[in-house]
Image (cartoon, rainbow, N blue to C red; front, top):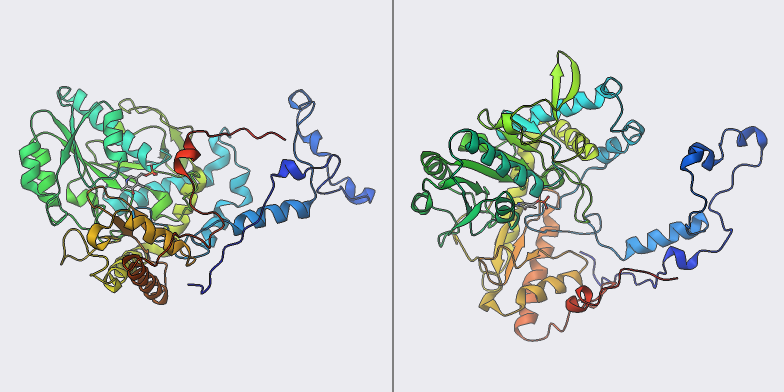
Length: 492
Ligand SMILES: *Cc1c(COP(=O)(O)O)cnc(C)c1O
């Protein structure tokens, strides 16, 4: 962690504001021999599609470079410092998968290209589908869904359709634990279900007994996150699955955070019928800026006929997009989904292999437990499951539950050139800090991070912390002002 951290503060104007008429970024070569290799840019666009005028900023190449370099200096990313954002798995995404995903072959592929011309990509996607099925213990995967939440939505729609076709159309309740990610109840409600909250016990786990008391002939299924958002493995998951199945419901697995289970355990073996994965958390796609993601959804034999289309079909070595699934819930996203994200996941899995994936999990779990144990328990006590080992993340509270304490600790960390943990989630922990260091960080940084948190707590307690952050390019925003008198239009 850098001593004396100070983030750059550029008063950076918009590109439109520094634009000057006639200024150009690049001139075509004047040597006619070379110039003929460079077509006039406009000539590449069919005449009827050309605009008469486009108001784009007119700038030199250097101005553009400086602009974006300066903006990047005012930003923060996992490539600048530790980013242990729990439930988000901000791990390092190897550059080689980035290179593969941005290769020319990928950049120039078009979704409407005839399948014969993209057999390579389709064969990769087919293989990815098989690998994700193997990793989770499912029969088939649909790769098209673009986010975790969309995978969840697809999954609960599949449960609904299955029940409708099997005499369960009156089943309208989905069980969701109180520690679940907010997208779970939201997806269930959007699919038309009533959400029944399952309480966690004082050790932070869902007990099979609690589930037995809530299931009935109204139960359509249960959405379950294992390990849960407290970072704890749900030790009664097998009995929970049994209880829901015995009542006639189906089991949904929220696999957004597979970092603790890769190569170790499979939701399919725990009784789950349908799962989603977040490739943009566990499988090497950078995220955090709202960029493209992929939340493939997988199912066992019972539910796979309902998967969203298209699926990738292998007709004896010839690959195609299969839209022809008569019981499918239908199409939720165009074409194969976000293919570059899928390709990164494929590269990542192939690079690591089965044993490498298992090592990722071992290291992620070791790092989370190590960092958590380095925190002073008198400053950051755990709220649930005191003696239990964590999986990929740990949730602590700020001692004394000092109001606003978690936010202050988070902001003070920013002043040290690292990112804060996730704060105020899960909702069942007050003044929560949810820390997920991932497998990527070296031990020295885990030590420094824990030391920094312990020191910050001391300053918070004795009232000398001040009002962080003060060293970042942007201070605290007025959140009310940022959302109410919001102006999104720029005039120049
Ligand atoms: C991130 C996350 C989701 C939602 O994924 P999105 O891609 O953001 O829609 C769902 N469940 C859990 C546990 C998560 O951490």
